[in-house]
Length: 241
Image 1: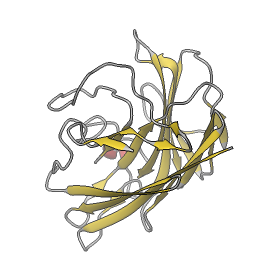
Image 2 (image 1 turned 60 degrees about the vertical axis):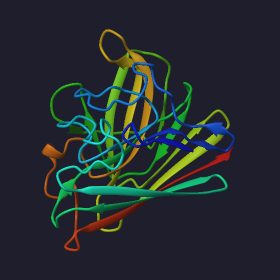
Image 3 (image 1 turned 120 degrees about the vertical axis):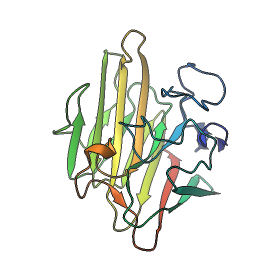
């Protein structure tokens, strides 16, 4: 795998089971996004912290070199690899009681017909405007053909998600005992952005139950314990199918 430390620590490549899983983006920008005030989609996997949507949009890390301290918090990570597996261990230092949302905002290189399999207790569906609503969502969904739609959802209590595409399966599992663990989905089938749409599939393990930290209820965000430290682990593995 490869990361770009100058571009917010973005994951730029992840080859497992003989193929590349990360989408390379729509070519909107070359080089790091350092100093930009409006998020630009570069593909790969962005670390979204301390929120996904809202202020700052896609978090406060993507437009700084990796290692940037946000409001006194320090987020670090360590990678390890084995056959067919990448593990990322995270460590956050912050004042006790600090609330946040974090997501591994992974945009995947998948073709129409790819399937996403999940198990969750509640789906929070996000329209283009207005508040989220509780909505049905299938346990197995398909990344369909270009139809001009785009939808975002948070699947609550969903630590594991699997994606099947072109003869391989990627499984992503997030572990953080005592904290809310969800999976966010962004299924853009040519419906975003207005005027110049492209296709993108986001499958995003996350801590929290909402995209926007400002909308988080009492149990909707991760909370740093009294020790002032919190750790979590993201495991990604792939196999031929």
